[in-house]
Amino acid sequence: MVRLVCAFLLVVCPVAAFIPLIDGGKGMPALYNGWNNEQLSKQAASAVSRAIGAGKTKIEVNFPPVPNVEEVKFGTPLNQKFGKNVVAKDLKFKGGYKPGSEVSRQLIAYSNVYWAKKLAGAAKGGVLGGKQACVLSSEPVNFANIQSMGDLSRSGKIMSEKARKEGRTGEAVICINPGGEEQWDRIVSAHVQPGCPCIMLNSAYSTSYDLGNKRGFEEAYYLKRISKGWVFRSFPGPWEAYLERPDGTVELLQQYRTKPALREVAALVRDESFKRYAINNDRWSPGFGERL
Image (cartoon, rainbow, N blue to C red; front, side, top):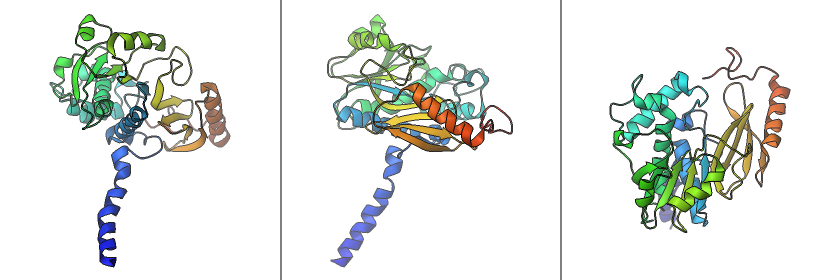
């Protein structure tokens, strides 16, 4: 009997130890390794899977599509590494990532296709789900240059007549950069069948100037930079406020059972940062936490 128990533990324990690697673990992803080592994609896909399993069909997923969004035009080393080693390679982009190439010039647009590809399995219900998943984008993407779409069965442009006509029964739809949330219900009506999942992925701007949306889309996975820190939420968990330290690590300051106001979280993180570090917590200034 003892031998049986020991054998069981030898089998089970290694598997249990790998569970955080399967779902990306708890808490916000590591800055900025989480973009490159699949932690972020695993977390987001797991959150979407849990939300759909809980009956949610209208879903928002929002996070920085590249490590340094504000500096994407200048090609920071972190963005270049992500574009070359992750996006272009995973999508098998024709010609690869080179200075001046299409994928380097439109890095956010193609990064979002990469993220949609990573979410597709969860959106269609996993290996046994039996559904199809498509990606629609509002961004300047040439899908013909992408040679590996994974679980994405088709692609198209949001609100185009062609994309509407090609819709399939039971299809999950991932919409990249769908615009202001006042358009989302129109997009659902145009492209999504009743009861099927629709994921609004990485809208580039908010017309509510707050966290998440006010249209009833479940914020299944949400990561937003605020002054001196971050706001994070992974379904069905709480909303969390993180302080970003001068060395680039983060610290959880507070959890919220319901979605807080942006101004409330921003004030909490900003005040704590100033209390601890005064002006010495600036990611832009050489010698004072610069880490791009």
